[in-house]
Every structure is written in C-alpha cells, then in structure tokens.
Image (cartoon, rainbow, N blue to C red; front, side, top):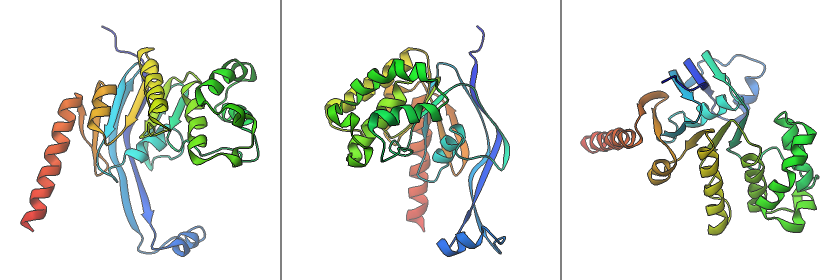
Length: 252
C-alpha cells in the first residue's frame, strides 16, 4: 500500500533559546551579544514525519519541547538547524484570542483572520455564517471584540479555526472552551475533521483525550523524541520515565 502524502516533516531539527535573567537583559540583547548567556535546548535533533489523515498526540512534561514543535509547524518559530516542511493550510487552536483587532466586530475579525490565513473573500463569505452559528455569540457578533469576555473571544477563535477547512489542525489543550454543551460541540467538530481525513496534531496532558482522538503518539522528553508510535505504548513509556524520575528523587 502506498504511503499517504507527507504533511509535516522535521529533518534533524534543533532549536535553542537564550535564557535571560530579566527584561533588562533581554532588551540589551537586541543591541549587544549577551556574554556568558545560558541556553535552553528546546528541541534537539528531532526527525519526524506526519502523514495525511493521521491524528497524532504530542505528549510530555512541561518544557519537553511540545510548544516549540507547534510554533514551528505554525510558522511562529524557526529552527537553529535542520529543516521543517509543512504542506497545506494550518489552523492552530493555540492562543485562541491572539490576533483579534479589538475595535473591529466579531464578524469583521472573521475576515481579518481569514486574510491572515491567505483565504479569498469569496471563500470567507461562504463560511461566514457557519462560523457565526458555531460561535453562538448572537448579537455580540456585530459588536467590537473589546466588549467580549475572554470566553467569548475563545469561542470566536475556535469557531473560525475549525470551520476554515484546514489541511492540518493543531490543537493545544483548547477544548476547555465554554460550558459543557459547547465543549462537546467542539470535540464533535474536531472528530468530524479527523473523520474527513484531515491531519490533526493534539497536545494534551490528558491520557484519556489523546487515546480518544489519536491513533499515534509522539512522546517528547527534554527536547528529544523519546517514543513515536502506538498511543498506549507511548503512555507506558511516559509513565515509566516519570516513575524512574520519582525513584531517583527519593534516593537523593
């Protein structure tokens, strides 16, 4: 059987960040090369391929490199070495409220977000009412976003990203949107996207959610791929590593 199209490819990708003591040091680094700077290796020689139609969970402790991986896929961050290849339109449920123009209405922000994703007027107009209906903001849709609560902004962000028919959907713990009814609606929509053969990346600390939504899992540890494969096996390795860490901590 022929392998599905490669949607995301990381080829020996590494990324490190300079750690600053404070904002003053960070500002100075804009003009002068920092001396004796401490570096944090967020990703270290990572090579992975994710194929069309796959639903892949990204798991690991805080600081393991999960967010850096997602930022590279969405074009927010770039590697120090290696290559990242992404094929197709990416919708990211990361910072759902980021990028809104506060003085513009919710409806106007649908178009603004669409333009930033490279969508054409005709297509945005085609999906506009679908987004409006999904967000369930009623009359607020035609009010300035500055009048929205944080939850309303998240609803709008979620509604836009899941209804633009992306080739790749990136989700980072974004299912905590609104009340129980709306959360179920969000999960059902993501399930629909998966069933349509789209590529989905799901970052979560919830073993239950990853097992429910994903057919493969990548476990990152200290910026490296510790395991890549079966979801159940990934969590076995993850839990085993955590137990070993606890045992080492007790011995000290």
